[in-house]
Length: 405
Image (cartoon, rainbow, N blue to C red; front, top):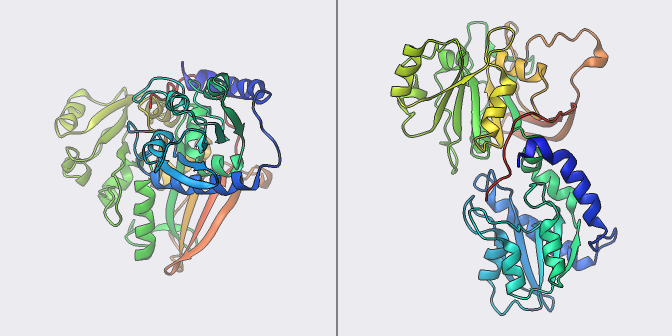
């Protein structure tokens, strides 16, 4: 089953149908909220490692005592519920399980969590949110109920969905969650008129960016950024995994001396190009360790970014960090392909230089791209604005299959 084809309608209908069979109430027991908050904190420990699976935390409580805790550490490993059971300090029979996401009921890389819950005779399960994965989507809840287990759902659901926005977006749209990040001067320049951009932001902001990289499945730049800055696009200033590196290069202009190619054997590197790029050049880059991904061209003969995102989603890439340059940033915004925008604003003025965002062909102020500021903070000398972009999302014809976790 393809999540992009089926999940919008299926998720909404299934949730409305199964709610009547769940003890979902507006006012929860005070302890339920308390223990779910603990489960949310546990879930956060999987950030940067659980993807494309969701971050999930679980707490086992018996006679008002916590007897077990767990979280989903990494895709392919035990789920949070199983870890909580295995970490329990006493028999879990008759206990209450608090878990941020509906337990799975299908065989993937691991057995169904519902089987373990039933096997260990847990009496009650409190869930943060129904799972959007079409392989689960209320089936886990029904499986537990049919075994006589009391189930309540929706505890801190809004908080959990916001916290796990990447997973829910990926499952419900069939596209990766896209974050645009750029560092700019106060007057909106990301480089000087001569193209110099290293470094506009302060050292603490650079560390923040490396943390962002570690929390995304992939990082994307245009070939212009490679030609200008020769970046590594790896995680070096913090602990974390290196994301897949994607270079949008419609005509395979990337030089063989690029750091990205010299390290392609250590960190997965994808060169996204069009069907019209030359085969000999593609073969040479592939021999250097890069994966050549041919994507249909858009009307301008460049890589179609929407189709590129669809291709990455089919490879279980649930989140993409776009780091530039200006042309790529503008294209993502123009085609409504971005979900989050992070602007690092340095206390500098350049005057003439490269704009962070180019022409979006907006002549009416009412058509301006609207953002919601989620967080504004100071880091070193810089101001960090973390925002979400509002735009209509459409189902795609292609996207990820249901995650086999």
